[in-house]
Image (spheres, rainbow, N blue to C red):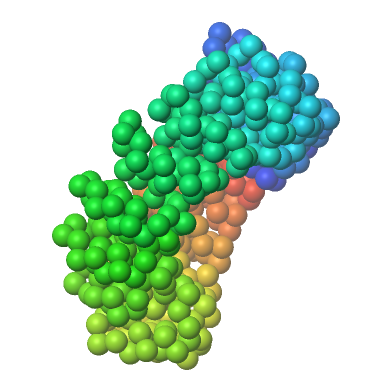
Length: 445
């Protein structure tokens, strides 16, 4: 399908009469395709629009079941629009979103298509009689799916199911009673590995046994589990595998002294860690005074720091710390500019990502030499980017599609990009609300 039309379909400024014309064209094209083809992409983009009339929504839903399912999940299609007999998958989607009628579940639990019953089995809040029907389903995959997702007391019964796959699924379900899980942990037919890694209520000896798994990935899964105690945390901190120690750093109750030991000397790029997110102001101040840049960098990941602490980190001598704090809202233009002056390319991308960066600062980023491609991408999608900054971003291959979609790009530049050799650029330009309506009209067959 023409990328210009796909872009137009997503353009929020497309006038209603052109939406109708484009939808009619897309449905006509789709009707002539022997199987789902290019017109489907156009219809999908149209289905994302928030300004569709009710009759247009129904026309899209009637075109294909997968489109109806998508519209149901986004809330565009309602229970009044769906017949569970003719659109069972859309009905299941509404049930899964908590908007379907309970009687639909009873109807679909007896559907001859096991694929429908399998999807129904993962829906939350099913009536008890429907859960019982699915628990006795002749297809093992349906029962297994139910055991994996249901929050019903039936999980205790499914933990005793003769099919080991069903028992394994029940073991993975957080709603399965603890006493049943403890029994399953001794089941000779089951190799649980990480199946219990999200349970936070297991006995500590069981955690210790599970976390002694020979697979590092399994040990890492238990290392981040909030249910493990301090004794096991200390054991896992000495694990020889980096991925286990890094997972332990993401534990919400890891002691701060141990956390510091885990990050110092590790070259991983840390996101905001749960223990840091929960740290008190006093703890943050203490950590920010650490002699180790890796520890100060953890604090700099917070986006709700007191202004005094935030500004102190902004002038930290270590570029990695400054880079971490650079996107923090509230930083002054003076501090952001000083970051660029001191550390240059090392902080340029994160400065461009700061929500308070001014248009003038973003223009400065685009003129910086040497340039940084990732920084240009941040500028190209920044809501405060100016026309000159965006025009500069067009020179970069990776930033060009983002700049082409930015509403602050001058309209004449948007029109020029409609003939770009890169289809992603042309599609982005066609979706730009700055595109003149007269040009939009000319693009639609």
